[in-house]
Length: 346
Image 1: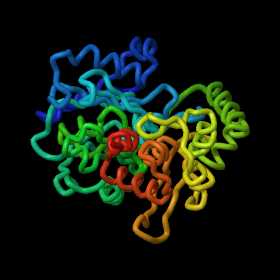
Image 2: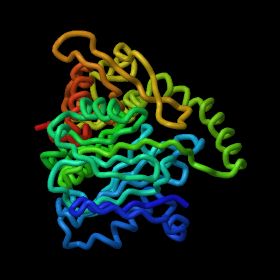
Image 3: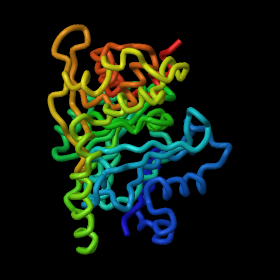
Image 4: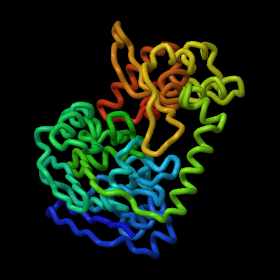
């Protein structure tokens, strides 16, 4: 079994204990385990931006293993958007690094008197001053912290989270977002700027599991759907959904977009300069895009399907370069692209 850390930012205390085996078996880690913790410890009277709210980073049973897509991390808290249970899921490499460091979950509570970040080096956790990073965008913070802590993985908020924007996201690996339910705002309310993880170990598991995982990875890698996603990424969903009347537009007032050829996977392909992927994922559907010149000149990971729809059909825009630029700005400022597109339409 792995470890669960209980971190109180109000008094800078850190308690690390073995994760209860019965809870892991019952809830399978990640979202289930975190939901149980939130249910047990956060009552209906607790405000989302209160120090009594919990911010939980939790890994799944397959995270950090050879299992296909074994990269996922769930972030859970009482949501400032709904006042109820909220969670967001993200990929990249941060979750796997946290699991390799030995942790099933980080439970963060309290409110720091000033900006801080968590530094995790294997099973050791320190609370470090983050005053110099407060107010900076996620790209600058990620680069700075990775330079200071080589070989680390960083999850950070931007100015949106610091200012308690209720659609604020947590960005890890520079372009992977735990974007839904305002988890970045909860993190900002605790004055927690970032979590930095460096692990020297690995996740141990039986050889039989490894053999099955490798066999499954080969199957996933050669599946026709995987090949399509590897070539076009999730943006291929635009042209699947539009003819079926399943591409939301004008904040769900329309179901098809007449200029779909300007914002589909092939339109995005003109700007893609490389493909990438998450930890232990044979699909490799991530696409990095670049606008070479003009008012929207930028370089970013993505955009993914949801972002294309959010800043395309949902706001009735057919300019792909603008979509790419909006994606970049949201990642840098730490804002959920899906919610932002919905809110922009009038």
